[in-house]
Each structure stands twice: as structure tokens, then as C-alpha cells.
Image 1 (spheres, rainbow, N blue to C red):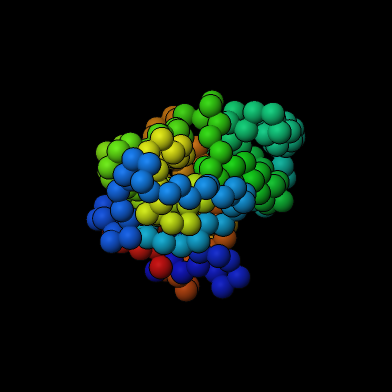
Image 2: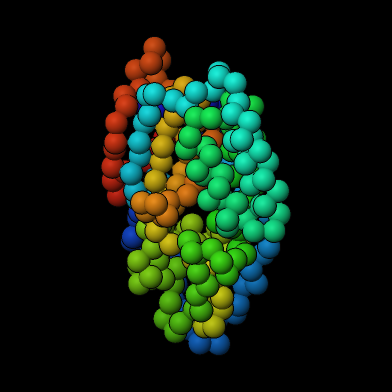
Length: 239
């Protein structure tokens, strides 16, 4: 079974739990004081909670990391990293496609992974909503809402505590009608690249799927980690 590397922080991006927690109370008009959103710090290694809904793939035939870099791909990598300063959404797509290929060498793949984590520290794992990002949306709290209810009614494939975390909410009972929240759409999917000892997390489906996080991990002893496609079940955990 896969276990996180001792030097790496385990990475799980959300959860499938749908039950309402006792501390997650509905919003009631103006009678409930508003807890101001705290500015979220850019996140490069989200803390582990429960496993997200989605698919997990383990790839035995990894990208070629020992071969010489393809010059054009290195230039494309440099351009994508530069683009992230002005258009992080497009840069994320470009970086995803480069990292899906095998033209980059080890050092440049690490540059790409670092750039992915930096970009999504804002696009996904902060309370900032970027208008051009199709994976996120802004939501106004309605009468009777709780974080669990919002996750259910908006059909989000994540636990309500993920909403709480990215919005910097310290007290989930402090929601107020009209309060703005950032929501992340779609299920998260995982890909393990065995030769790189990495877990890559994706959002979106099909051709629209993009990488939103990448982490170093440990694998089964003596190459015992199986390859294939696996479904993450509700209430299951990665660790």
C-alpha cells in the first residue's frame, strides 16, 4: 500500500463525507454574527483529512526523466512559468500538458511541479476567486445554509470542511446570509507516478482535466504498489 514519504506532508484535497456535523449550524438572517474571512495563505501542501471522490491511477511506466531535455519543451516550460504571472489559468493548462508528456528531464519536471503548486495555492487552495477559472465559483450564503448543506445543494464532490478551509472560516457556525464563499467544482482525481515517487492531483474531466497539486510520496516495498485504475470510495482515506 502507498504510504506518504516521511519527509513529505501527506496530501488529500477534500472528502466525500456528506453528513452534517453538530457544529455546522444553519445561517439565520442577521441574528448570527459574521465571522470575517481570514486571508488564506498560499497552500502548497494541504493537510490530510478524508479522501476525495474521484479516480486514482497508478502508473508503472513513468515519464522519461533520465533522458536529455527536449529544447522546445524547456522553452515551453519557461514560457508557461512566465505566463503564470499574468494568466495563471492558461499557465496551469500548459504546465499540465507538459507534465503529462515525457520530454522534460528530472530537474525541469520538478520546476513544473513547483509551478503547479504555486499557481493552485491561489487558484484552488485560497479564498480568492479568479473569474476566468472554470473550476471555481463564488457563492452567496442563503437563509438556512450551512457548509454541509451548501456542499450538498451545489453538488460539490468535497467535504464541507474543505470549503471552510479554503475560505479561512474559523467558526462554521458563524455563516451570515449574503456572505461570499469560494466553492471548488468537480471531483478530485489522483495519479501516482511510481518512478517519480509522486502523487499528482487533478480537477476536471476529460480534455478539461488539469493538475492542481503534486506531492512526493513513498511506495510499497520492493515495487509492490500495484498499477491500474482505482475508485476512491466515500468515507475512505489515503492514510
